[in-house]
Length: 188
Image 1 (cartoon, rainbow, N blue to C red):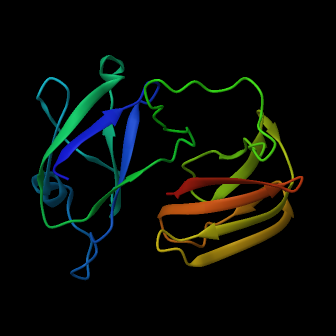
Image 2: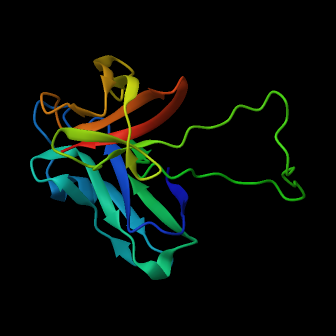
């Protein structure tokens, strides 16, 4: 950044993690973050970032109107903070190269992907394990900080409590019936 980023279809918010917003011993203000990043929509209008929680400037979001789906937005100014996109929707974002067709059959070495997630997301601490809209028991769940440090583990649970963790974005790996699902959760 500065540069462009794509707004996929179906999102009403895009979340960002400000990695060094606590660098001077206190959280940055909403005004300081807004002045550090100039983000423009597909019409060139400035978009103001909003904090997920009012006292924690490490996680903020941009409101996405439905008319912006499938467009590119631009970050024109990058101030003193390090910015990282955060996918907390558990949607897969990908691009397919032109001229490539996906075969209808699975290859012998292709692994079946587990589609599972946590709900609600974001949450103040209690999360449920969901697969195909149903509550499921995970054999194991590992929660990692944004830096990759393991901060919690759970065994044979269908819900778990991380209310003791600080607000922020965490990564999780969940094992269900021997298959793994990875994602992000937001602790408010």
